[in-house]
Image (cartoon, rainbow, N blue to C red; front, side, top):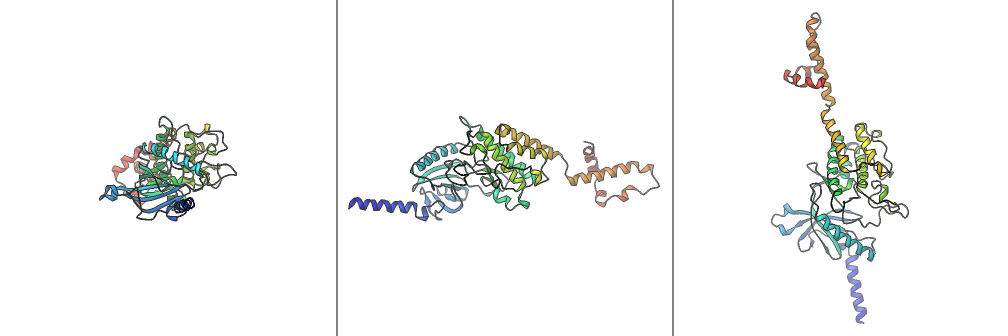
Amino acid sequence: MSILSNLNKLLSILQSVFFNPHYATGKLPAQSKLQQRYTIIENVGTGGMGAVYLALDTAFLPHVWSRRIAIKEMSQAKLDATELDAAIDRFQREASLLHSLQHPNLPHVYNWFQEQGRSYLVMDFIEGESLLQMINKASGYRFPVEQVLHYALQLCDVLQYLHTRQPQPIIFRDLKLSNVMVDENAKVFLIDFGIARFFKGGRQRGDTEIIGTEGYAPPEQYSNSQEETDPRSDLYSLGATLHCCLTGRDPRLQPFMFPPVHQFNPLPPPELDQLIQDLVAIDRTKRPFSAAEVKQRLMALSLHRSRAPSSLLCLLLLGIAIQVRDLCTWDHNPLGPHPVSMMPRHLLLVPRRTVLRLLPLLVG
């Protein structure tokens, strides 16, 4: 009888842990505490790989608002006992690795622990929105070229940092719009990696499992591929992300298909279009070799665009050129009307000093 009683108690405990909604992924109630230190404020996101909570670190009271943190909870769905042990082991190893990373475009990891049979990661809370949230509100569901270049340069910085870690490079393997956060100062943060690489589920093709997200993941991240991932795998995902930012076209709709950007958006320069095509090459030997190489090409584009006068400035310069030319030749045509009287009024208001400063641009 005692054995049966103990089995019933064990069953009751297992049911409370695995079937009580308060213990399901993403279901921690507000004001609950973890480690007798972290107070949950609210759930700010739940996905197939886990949930993220906004929380307060009460160890820093009374300055609680200076230590608002994010707590990532690892999902245990679809994992049997053996897979769960492997996932927890990987979580602990990679949490330790993430804790050692220091980069301005990465949230800092402060702590990791297990409680009530679940694994948690404590990190910086990023005040902002993901690129996915932003593009859903953007005009035409795409971003201006300058904005995309600004984000891309920062992503290259953090990818280069990860890819050059020793003794082994860190391959992110899931770069996409929803994993890039942008704060109010347009600073980019790469999020959501390291705790859920043991992935079983999500969208599949037959019996083929995908590491990452279909549409953003390169061919080598499919389980039937004979190739291992390397830094160029992340560059493929970067290209898919930039393509979506400039076109508004979701790469998940037709994986491995990236028509030229200019078919959807005439504004990006051909060089940027070509760079994206290079990044999403199926044959990774045709992709850029490193994030540093991509950054160099992006910086050349940014520099060229910063030097090129805007369309409005070009019109203004043209008007000034005509004004200067006609003033110089008016003495040779004294019977005609003074050319200044025929100029648009806004050009007559341009100071002489401004004209002199802009003249080199006319011939530069």
